[in-house]
Length: 151
Image 1: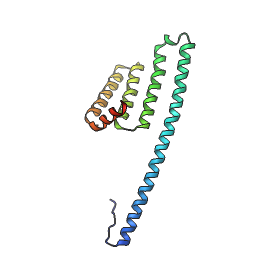
Image 2: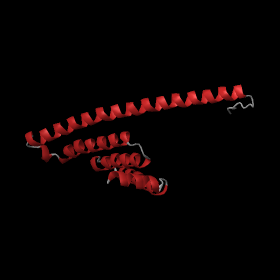
Image 3: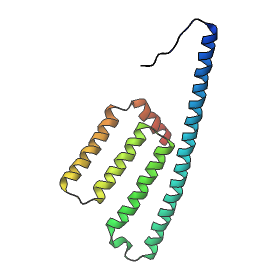
Image 4: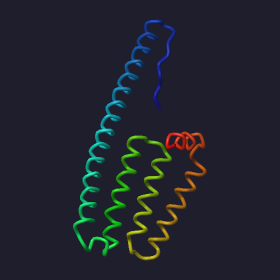
């Protein structure tokens, strides 16, 4: 257990306040650096997703059998959608956005995988759990702020 020294001595108080102020400054710098790194990663991801979308559109018009394999088409397009949701989560990290990314990713897995029924039931239970978390554990004020921002 950490012990925070206290004293009535003004010199010690001044030193403690100075150290606390320095710690806050360092923490602020680290948070800012991390935020910039998140934005850079989001930008790189958007560029990659735009490239992937461009390739998909190109294949739609040049490959005659593109729409014949619906599973392949859905796999590629839903991967782009999950990527876009990931970028949105990086840019605006809220509990609701994180749950939405997880919901989209799990839904994509259910749609594309042809695993055994128990795997599908587990995925559906996960989605139900995410909806329950959103309903009961996220404050309504956070959800309302997000709804206002999306309009």
